[in-house]
Amino acid sequence: MKANCHFSMGLLGAIALTLGLSSCALPSGGLFSQGRGESSGAPLKPGVRYEVRKALSAGVPFRPAEVKRYYFVLESPRPPLIAATGIPGKKMTVRTTAYCHDEADHLAYGARNALGTPLRFGQVRSAAADWSRYPVGTRFRITDQPHIIYEVDDYGSALVGTGTIDIYKPTRSLMNAWGVRHVDIEVLQWGSWERSADIMRDRMKWPHVRQMMRGIQERMYQVRAGNSRTPVTAAL
Image (cartoon, rainbow, N blue to C red; front, side, top):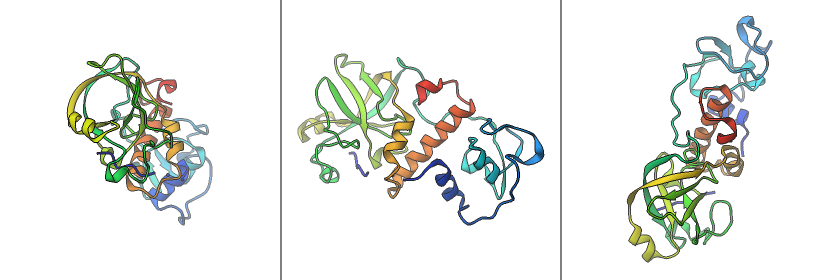
């Protein structure tokens, strides 16, 4: 199932591209508009109008969708949109599929994952997912396979925007035997948003990579702004 395509743009560059600000001349001045005296890097406050260029210069977190022309008002915090919002030990029911390295959409990469390392099938096994939901390095166990650990080290275009996890199988027969299953999993360790973003920085030409990066950036904005109860150490 997994279609694997392998992203370079910094945070400010990605926001500027999204907003089309690369050639805009915005007003200059202090860090924020309204003369409110916030310090550089301080979380933005809902209901306050900020000047985009000054907010970008200060390195404060906000979502591009909140921008209206040269100014924007931060929306009230909303619940995170992704799965990785809990602590290790979280249990959930997920939809799973299976993939094999000799499928047509994986032949270009051989038996290697998105990290460029060999796909694993042993006590620790490879899995692919949307990295904006399950960041790279996320480890989990399927409850009826207690002695096997799966680690997210791959992604695929068909998985982005879904909660589906793709389980690696070394042969087509094993892949077909797995089919589509809804299983209970226990997350043993959440992966790293920063590492996920770093890996994808040189792969921005792929639409599904850009979509994952937007999701990862939103998650990191929420953590830095204090809009989530997830500890920063757990999310990053």
